[in-house]
Amino acid sequence: MTATALVVDDEVDLCRLMQITLTKMGIKSDVAYDLAQAKAYWQDNEYDFCLTDLQLPDGSGLDLVKLISSSSTVPVAVITAHGSMDLAIEALKLGAFDFVNKPLELPRLRQLVENALKVIRQDDSVQPADAKTPEQQLLDQRLIGDTKVMYTLKSTILKLARSQAPVFLSGASGTGKEVAARLIHDLSPRREAHFVPVNCGAIPSELMESEFFGHKKGSFTGAVADKQGLFQQANGGTLFLDEIADLPLAMQVKLLRAIQEKTVRAIGDTKEVAVDIRLLSATHKDLAQLVAANHFRQDLYYRINVIELKLPALNERAHDIPALAQHFLALIREEWQLEGSPQLSDDAIGRLKLHHFAGNVRELRNLLERAITLAESDIIAAEHLGLPEVEASLSEPSYCDQSQSTTDPTSQTTPLSNSVAAAEDSLPTGNPQKDTNASVSAAMQESTSAELPEKGLEAYLQQQEKQLIVTALQQTGWNKTQAAELLGTTFRSLRYRMKKLGIAEEQPDS
Image 1 (cartoon, rainbow, N blue to C red):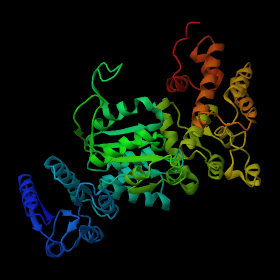
Image 2 (cartoon, rainbow, N blue to C red; image 1 turned 180 degrees about the vertical axis):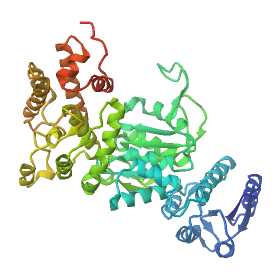
Image 3 (cartoon, rainbow, N blue to C red; image 1 turned 45 degrees about the vertical axis):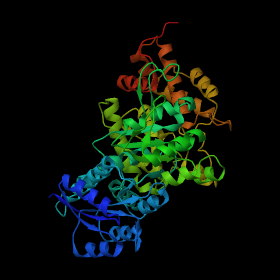
């Protein structure tokens, strides 16, 4: 026998069925028929995991969940009566590993037990006392920083990875919610299966059901073949629903049912298919406010928000900025295939620490990409960052609550057409580097309108950068070497940015 389990339920036949199933899986089990007997077994023996009903003759299985979760790391799963999702959610919040519904389906039970065994095997991998575990090493590689809030975040992610409970990741835009979601998956027993990220705001409402649940050939006009939905793609793994607040109400109802029943039915199909997924979701919006305004279903909110993980803003961990900046510079060097090694000067590091990062970690990376493009050498000075003067920023009392100064390349607020026109008029005619700086400066000086870009800051900045590159290519007859010189960057860097922004390698036919 490879493991031992404690099974707690007052139905004798069901206990016998579970014992037989566990024995076939090579697991020895003890059976308790009430809460008192279960507590006695727990005190007198050592178990690898526990499976308990929530409705017991002398009390609630929640008491056993509390006892086990508070005193050990043993996975404990709960059995709930059909329709008792509220109790299952309460158990997950108390530390339960997972739940299974009655009437008990053996394939679902076996899947639950296998996931529990994977957690046990993770715990059994002993490391030297002074060495970091592979899990801790992975956390340090992906979550850069050693501030207190980051230490707390890493510890929480490790705990969440052991569970199967739905997790809601909250935090401002650019804080790294998808990075955290991938870590939860990669540290969990599901890491061998797929991690499927979905941007709910990017799917047209009329295609949502087909995207999520799939469709059968001929089920509607244009359905020329069977299509597997996102739930089926994530089967056995993790489904990450980003910007879940953007789901229309009609789709929220269907998503709620799929989460509760753990089954989906493709459009045009007559039968439902069981799916085993871990659900993670995120949004930068305030879901509680949307629930109060009847824009988001309250019952779905409670299902996805079993455990909330809040991602800290970059301004809350300014001490981590130098390490994060060096990490991004190394990534950019590798992606752009730069020959040198870009480094920040001391004054540039100091200026970054004083900047208010409205766009958080994403803004920091974008800022460094532009700084590398503007710098004439591998040393990035403070002026290459394009940030407002420190004195000016500190003298503005509402600096942290408003958009950045108009000389901040991460906070352009002019309509795109105005700034692009300014950039086209000021493209270089003399010294490439000076003229490039002048062109960017001229474009930024035009950013005086209070009108915000319709599609958001990131899309606006990418469009502006794309237009500058296209204009330079047009002026050089699509000669990329000359265009790179004109823009004050390298040929490789220009090629990378063209690919990233979807700019054709050859001049389009006019």
